[in-house]
Image (cartoon, rainbow, N blue to C red; front, side, top):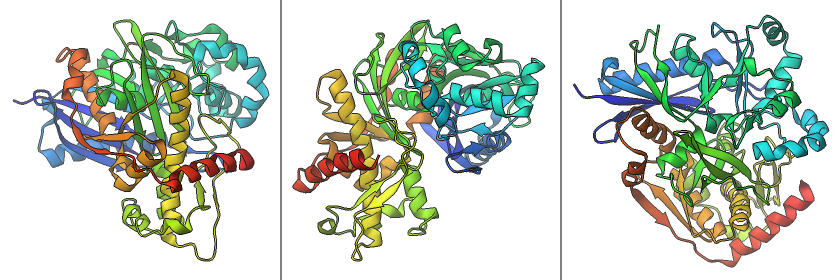
Length: 491
């Protein structure tokens, strides 16, 4: 009987389940289930944890139906997840509140008031004090949610990122663990030791007892138990944050490997090896993965809104029926009319390298002649220009030119967006055959964690689809300069 890896990719808008053959290492099937986005107030973004759990269950069940593969053929599970999204639940796994999503900005005032006192702690985390990260959300829940307060007083509180919540549910509340790539996004972990830091816990008023144990990224995290959609006893052998999993899926386990993932947001990661590199240009220092007690680090640039801007074009402006339609519509645009037309996709603030949580989205340079197609192309340009800001900051940090960027994620299928990115960033954009690198990467991690392959083998499993080569035009150079000028004025 053939055996498979089950990969669970729990993302911002949905949960994808994938099956990977342990012999060919190919994806044999996948299924995605979306869930509701909750916006209680301006700048607030939440998810119902039961919705997330239901989407996981549904995706797995539908995947088995589609592939005709039996659950008993699964020998290992990998979990990858939206990273900074924060959960509060009891010790029996019952949610105490909606998850506060990584995009949520409700802790902006807290971060502004604590910025100076945090400055001496940044060396431990490699992160700015920003609402993006989990500890600010945990602090908010402990201070503002009555159910969370009561659970804390009764010592019946679990605080974690999504990976731990899913692991806890999958193992019938027996395995309360996370790993270093996720923990490095909380503002609570010391990069050097990859353990919770007392000074950081004290700063955010969070007890260590509420938090999971930090482990390596590839190991036995526990076994499935008490589920009606998976048999008991399947090992969970890998957990990675989504962007780190994507780097891994690109074969990016070596120093100097660089990728950009285009999903709800867009994130670039550069593997910097076993040395902690601190950015001079407001990029993030993070853990790529930890293996056999050795952490491998990365520099990261974060663009909060990428594919979400296309969803806004679809759902709010109703200009397209499905997200993929934006490419053909944007190709109709006349760039001669777009020299001063800009789309700033800052619906939830600006990420790196500016870190302005108060920024908001804008479209400027509209005239009565502006067409729908031009607005849609401006949207794609805004995504690419935002990513380019992080690329240029990264190039300055590492003091070498970036000539090639590996790309993945759903929006990387948009050929026009990839060509625009190549033109603005003046580098080759390389897309792999497998663009579901997040789910694929954590499946490779599960193969390592279960002893089926070695870390050195993952590079050989990557294969190229195509390159996008930069086309030099005055239009792109002029627009980059005006983009920078507008950001300095507007935000």
